[in-house]
Image 1: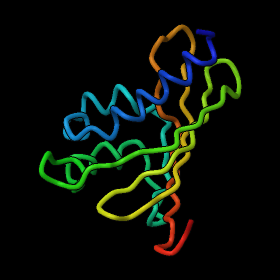
Image 2 (image 1 turned 135 degrees about the horizontal axis):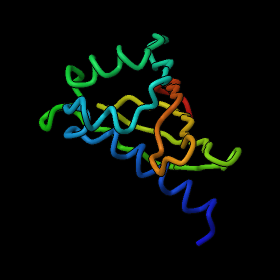
Image 3 (image 1 turned 90 degrees about the vertical axis):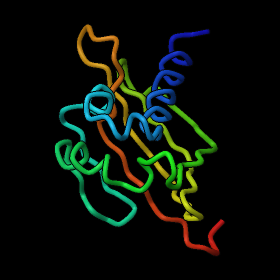
Image 4 (image 1 turned 120 degrees about the horizontal axis):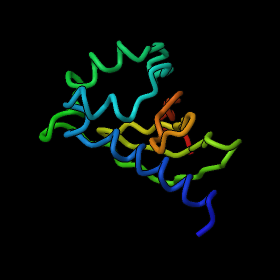
Length: 128
């Protein structure tokens, strides 16, 4: 496999880990996957910072084993620059669909990919 494919695959693996309730419940595991400069524009339109997201993740319904879980599909990725991957995909969570995009970056000599930016856009019930 070429480096671009491996980098995109690693970013997708990180994205999937962030949807795992066990990771969402653990501040230390979530910290490994979120860049310290992370921010998100959620499906609600709210802007989340790194600290706000780490504090809120364990309290979200999608963080419990018995709660609703993300069903991701249609992943696509592009290597924008060395150490910067852009992902797009769709999720369904408790019947609600969203189009998602995220930027994953690897800084310096680190081998760790971390989510730098995430945005979710709700898909209307009658949307394609």
